[in-house]
Length: 174
Figure (cartoon, one colour):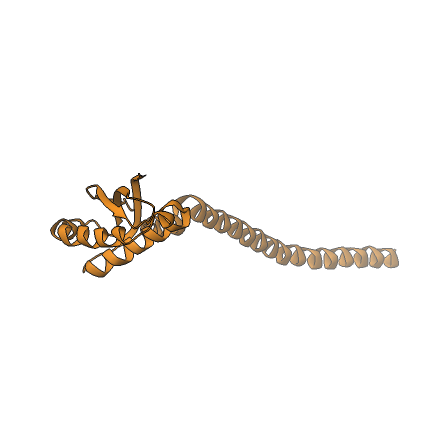
């Protein structure tokens, strides 16, 4: 019996030792698992908060930069000129050219300067038109060259802005 009691005591000792060994392991494991769970939850909450901030609350820098950087639509400013009637150079007879044009200006501030320089502008255009031949004016490329020549000559006179394009609103050869 003593041996049985020793066995019982020994098994009790083993159970107590196993129980003691298991209890501290559980106690050590429980705080470790709890800490890991808390850290993961904090990371999930922080990630969700950061995502919400960047998606919903933070102003979009691209939209604000585009609004600042986007140029305002530039409205074209036109300067209408009175009709020009000139004789064309032609050996076959007398040919007349009637041209009505509008000048597209680079800046609205130039409009007043062009009003002041109107006589000088008209004289320059008249000299240019009266030096043209009938054949030059009948050719579509000749008309395009005429537009460019008018713009170049007027831009030589203007001091503030420039003519960006010349539009013919009437172009009659008779």
